[in-house]
Length: 140
Length: 140
DNA sequence: CTACCGGTTAGAGCGCACTCTAAGTCAAGA
DNA sequence: TCTTGACTTAGAGTGCGCTCTAACCGGTAG
Image 1 (tube, chains in turn blue, brown, yellow, orange):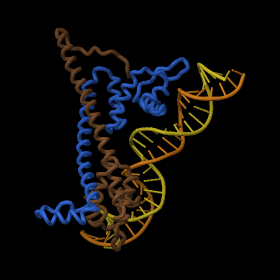
Image 2: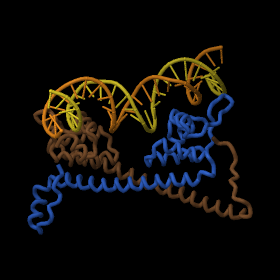
Image 3: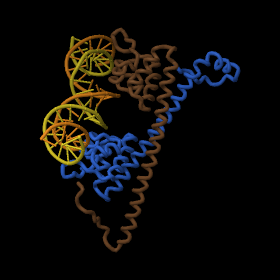
Image 4: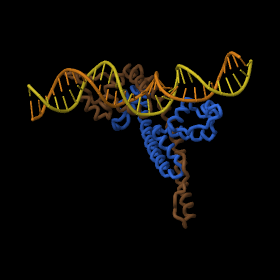
């Protein structure tokens, strides 16, 4: 498979594939007799995994570290596992943070949705019902 | 409140606060008679909200758009709501993506845990010999 | 008065992750 | 043979979001 084909299949640009090879994120590709890169389909699995790491916010530096360990053979498996576990915790924390932000967004959006009605219904229902806590202040 | 104090309270640097003001993300601050910025505590609410947008991956361009709408008064509420709803969907999609990646990470990590186990078993089968590392050379 | 601290500005610089350019090589089809 | 198009390289450029520098100003403690 030549680089254009790999680009199509992987979703990376040929430029990016060469860049990744240059920095060590992808192994040096084999060349055909005219000097062009010739890829085995198995590279796609690795690129896919890199994509996952990228999606989850791992910086390239750290992917490089992982790639280096991977190139270092079976003796590096504990370190690779530790690296991924650390990353997993960061991702989990980030997901939790995003979910907290989603709640805030929901509240904010609900505030906008209610802003038309609020003058009439919300204030009215508020005074009819029990005088609850004074929440829902903002929503500019 | 002067800029240093606001920096401490908001978690932004004074440089960043000035930068945000320059690009329009923060309103032009009032000045005291010696020309220094003097903030009202209410700015913290806005900065906090900006932080949520940033955390959830909204680019500054879009925050600027929201800030501009906000400055445009009550007539812009529908647009602000639409913007936040669109953003919320993107964040939800991103969370889903991250969770899918977490599953992949879990699998990968479990794989390493399993290989460690296999190695233990393998070593055990050669327990008569000294557990020497029989790795091959090369690959770096 | 002097030192020092924290503020002011315009604008330069940085780190990241690409993204593209220029100039050239190579193989196949009209 | 000529043209087309995909490939090659080193290296320059881009967009984002800060981050810092240089040179200066003003208020306060010793």
